[in-house]
Amino acid sequence: MPEFCDGMTRGDLAKMIHLYIKNVKGINDLNDISKAAVLKDLYDCRVCVDHIAQVYLRGLVDAFFIPQGEGGFYIFDSRRLVSREEYEEAFLRAEGLMPLEDSDTE
Image: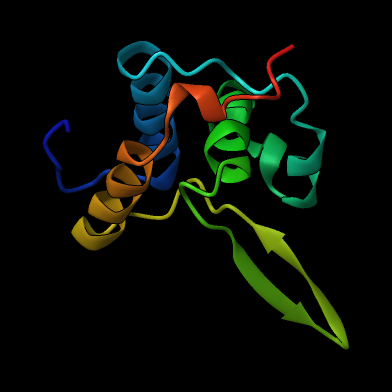
């Protein structure tokens, strides 16, 4: 696991986790990331879209629910700073992934 550093954002974490599972663990990207569109801020950072979608859809980094009226919406909040606990939890979740679980890469 790369070392935690202060000032890391959730977008940074998404990129680190995504590249870790792809390049170190050998897990292919999910082909269909359309379900990540539930995140209202998914496209706020164009270069982060795939990183965020991959880790969100795999349950490695959670989204935040924002209540509004009788409903609400989800955001990833890629500019929010990451706590050491959130960082460690995301990497623990990533460690549990196995390449054979990667069934959506066809």
